[in-house]
Image (cartoon, rainbow over all chains, first blue to last red; front, side, top):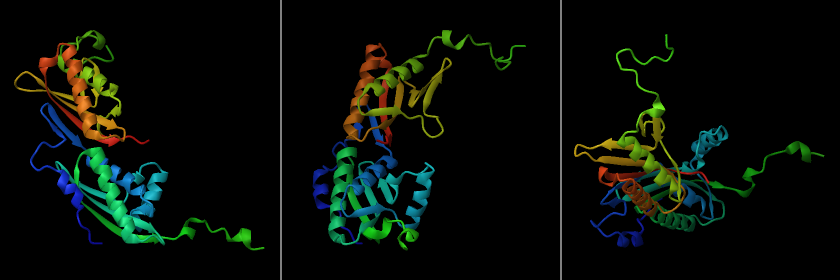
Length: 149
Length: 124
């Protein structure tokens, strides 16, 4: 899906002035994993987003989380973090019936707001790939025997 | 024969607890305490292999690296696990706390730059 960088964000960054992560008495760094986690949490807050990650990632993720080595909050999230800017790629599954452009727009807004608010980095782009739709009945486990008689 | 004899060439060191802590270790300990006292800091993080720490006098401070600089001061790197709060102000509070605590212990002029690294967000 084609995306445009959010225009409201670029106005706030004052070029070549002090980054919030620099100070006279030492630097501050924020790990990429932290930015990815913030993006993942922000993405899950948006109505219409069912899950993050593509089919294979979610299948493997379900398994690794069960044995406690996976972190679902960074699943489906890729970030590139520079000194004062970040770019985010998200892979999402949308609830069937939700208008995808509107979900994508809300998602983009929320991710940008959270990352800028919590990490002080300015977000240059949020690329969103919708890989699947989720139908409300999909999660109900099939138990055919009980209903035969 | 002493079962825990030190390497043969080295002079046998005194018991760990009685050896005086070096300036490096004192700075590391003060910085760790100061950082953990800041609200929003959940833990110090020594890294996946545990190398981000300062050791000496039989003790170890995880998550704080104190490096001696050529000019006689020490550079600090503090590695944090934080709560989900705005991170740049939190890092600034940690830096200020570390500088204040070390200054109060008369180590202020020995402390150079204090780098703050947010390594992880705590699960909540």
